[in-house]
Image (cartoon, rainbow, N blue to C red):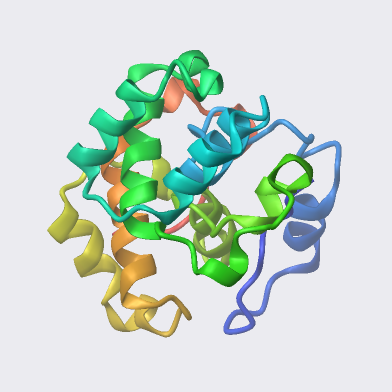
Length: 200
């Protein structure tokens, strides 16, 4: 279960802090409404153990999002796990690959069939949202907003956010994930996550 991270800049009232940490308040699947990010989508696609040469080619390529979209469509027969992804998931994966591939040669495992992909792959936008955005406000503040890239990056570069330890590329990747996947209607958010938080 992924628990919220908390900022040390604020004094959290004990009852509020305990409510975040109580498993009955945050069951394991409470964040399932947030679309999967590229790391998880890629790990799922590779879990069917496609041919090693296909995996190595994918992990070694550098392409932009549009090129990756074409690549994923063209290689769906060889990497059969891609067939299970929706068009939006394929776009999210293509976007993730554009930021994170190629992997450094030293990070590509020798035994691809035994690779633990979720641990080996770089974090994706969903990971970053869950790991960093909840430190100061409830997740709903982020994932219900439909914003353009300049607006997301503008927020991330405000004094209240600039101290978050993300690289420029991670901020770009996070903004790109949110452009594709945020704007979730409030009625799709679990009730326990609808109240509170900050506003921009």
